[in-house]
Image 1 (spheres, rainbow, N blue to C red):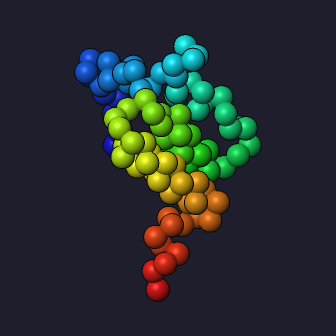
Image 2 (image 1 turned 180 degrees about the vertical axis):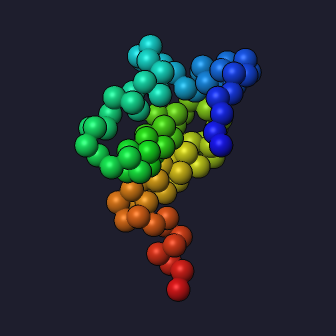
Length: 93
């Protein structure tokens, strides 16, 4: 059963700098909520939201290695949104 977590630390962490775009005063989550049409399947919306989250935070956190990891994570979510499988699943036999 899911329950709401009213933890002050988790609320504060969702407002860290890498979740706010530097050139716009908007939380990434707000942008994600606005991006997908209502008639898009829920799973696809979720996967695209995860991909966009990683794209939006590239360069906001860590060094080049972290940026490249965020790019790879975004690609993984985009591939799954398009094909229904993770990239590594298409190589499995």
